[in-house]
Image (cartoon, rainbow, N blue to C red; front, side, top):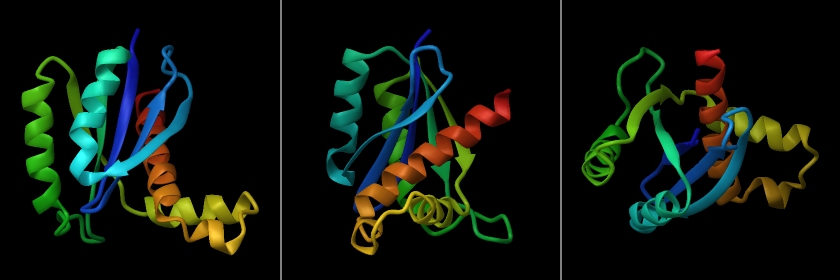
Length: 137
């Protein structure tokens, strides 16, 4: 069994999270620049077996796609071309940033650490992955 890799795609940064090989636990992986994301993911897939990609789907409160889709759609198209044999699914990512900040507060992180956008992106990707894992159980 391979891992599930979650992607919180942003214009500047991409938060990544991954499961263990048994797909039981979601862990933060890394934050990379949007420009380097495909190369990073390619390298990761070459080192680890990945069964599935889970990509955060940004929705507005009324359920329509947010403006961020104009950046995510081309990224996902390239992902599908690079990894045609790996399933890719979208997961609603509404409120993940809010939940990430709440997680940081609950974890007792100092204000300076809570302002680390790369950390927020990694935690958001982990929340996206956890949401997906809970939905299939």
